[in-house]
Length: 434
Image (cartoon, rainbow, N blue to C red; front, top):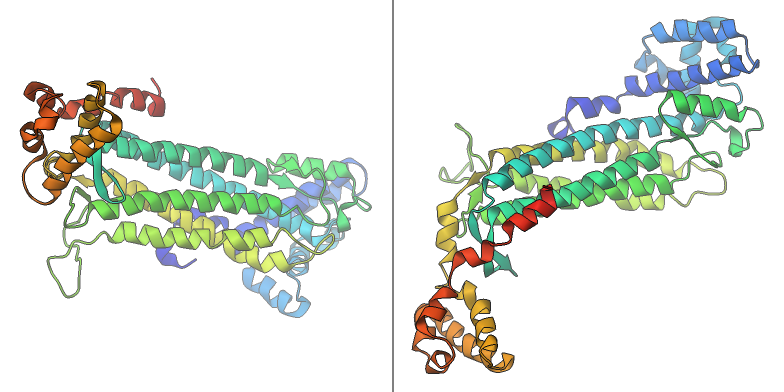
């Protein structure tokens, strides 16, 4: 992933130095287990930890060896032997490359998940704070982009909070599913390595044992993981798109914070553009682009091929690094979002009271008028408002057919904004508890 959209903690998860350190730990833990069951000398296992643990693995040296071996794990083991010496012959006993690669990937995805879950916690905190801040800030709800009925800006944010709460739960589940180790040897039969070694390594690395691996951990696990990242990214885009629409000049109900010295356009000095949320829309597309390749990785030939390998070398870092950056950026956008309640109120009144049409419709039906006739009465007055012939309440008061059913005072009572907000507390209790 390019540095522009990367953060250090997540980037470090995918660095060569981190990868090689995890590889060493897998091999060293395996040696401990092998020593415990009497396959290799305990002194050798101890020496491997002491010498390898102090080693600073030289990425350039490993790359140099790989140019000859054409095999990354062999290149690493060759470099490791340069530190350990004769006891290195006990390293990788009965193991195959995928034992190291797949178990390492599980550790990396687990660590990446922890960062992403923390990112979601920060975003959820920002959403909750701003939702309560604007719990009763009235704004117009829109369907098809057209004014519908009143809601509150706090409810918009509560909706996002609930969505990202589900995202967090899905990510916790995805982390659990991806956290398995396989130390089962060639084609996964444990022919040359005892299953107790796998159990020991898994426990030491905070993983579960893969119940049955061929030579690789089944890729349906990885497909589910990246699909989860794709869904989280879609939620990022949904909220980003909402903010982008609210910042349109004709709407201007909320906008991204515009910092001192910030420039919006190289040509037009007046511009304040929703660049952060537009960026988030693009980043979400990139995260989702990892989903299809992850799905296609599930179908490998027989017990193993490496068609998945090149894909995962790219989508593992790219998808997690991008989503980490996106979630942090979205949390910052929400935290600093500039909200304009006065504009929201003006927009509520823009259609001359049409947002109360359903209340009038229901009131007429309760007076004994059929729904079809009531709808026609309300709609003909509503269409007159659209044509600029007056405000909705005045037109209804002047309509004799409406007047036969509803008095002036009854009509005026139907235009109470507070009526639409009476269940806000109920919804907040459902979303936030208590």
